[in-house]
Amino acid sequence: MEQPTSLKGLDLRAEIDRLRKERNAVILAHYYQKPEIQDLADFVGDSLDLSRKAQATDADVIAFCGVRFMAETAKILSPQKIVVLPDMDAGCSLEDSCPPEQFAAFRAQHPDAIALTYINCSAAVKALSDVIVTSSSAEKILSQIPADKPIIFGPDRNLGGYLARKTGRDLILWPGVCIVHEAFSETELLKLRAQHPDAPIAAHPECPAVILDHADYVGSTRGILEYAYAMTGDTLIVATEPHIIHQMEKALPNKTFIGAPGADGNCNCNICPYMALNTLEKLYVALRDLTPRIEIEEDLRLRAKNSLDAMLAMAGGTVGQGDLGPAKVTGD
Image (cartoon, rainbow, N blue to C red; front, side, top):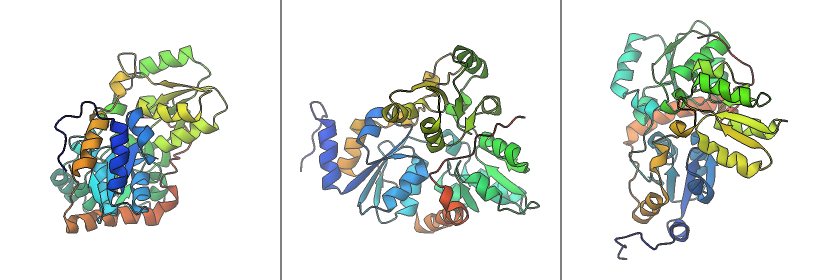
């Protein structure tokens, strides 16, 4: 079939639905995607939970509206399925901060350490790791490591620092950060709290300690959503990528959700520029052409899968639950 040279005049939603059926595709959208993508997805959620949901379907194609490491994880778990990412440039600052050759050299400097690695990393770094963790599973996995065993934690130094302060464990931290969560301003957050003194603050543990110190709840995107459902008040300040607020407003229209501000006093600087690369137009083309595809060499895929399997064996019940707990943590 000859493909149109222009998308002008196409009903993109109708065309995406048509291609979803023709390709036997499942569309995944992370909470940080634009609302119009979230609203047409088959599943909306955290990265690993999405990959596991897609794995459980009989779909032939996975269209992952997220970032590259997420689509790689879907391919690791579903090698027989075609996995497409609407924009292959949709990367991640945490993944970029941790090149596999540098991580391998870092591991070599600490030969006795076990490597617990946050899922926000490339397949190649997963293959160099012992156990992958999510923000919801990390604490449970840490509790199973002997106290005298050295632990490397990467690539997010903020999440690693939070876990070290909460658990009292000494962690050898890789110096990566998420540019979105790093952008939150303590000064602006305090101004916002002064305007809404009764509103609790829910924060993602990728935020710096100066933000987490003010949080009433710290947890993953899924955990923050569940906190919003459970809270008794009517206003919540949210310190993570603001597109998650779309799901909160759909589920809880009688409550008010306010994105925590960046240094410029608004939340625009906290919109993930990588997630924003995915659009309805690019999703349509990806389903139409089945490209760009995620391809992973089989030996690398199996080594990366080993570290994911280790996480599921140690903390499978926490995946997708998102709860790091309400306790505040202070310190650097």
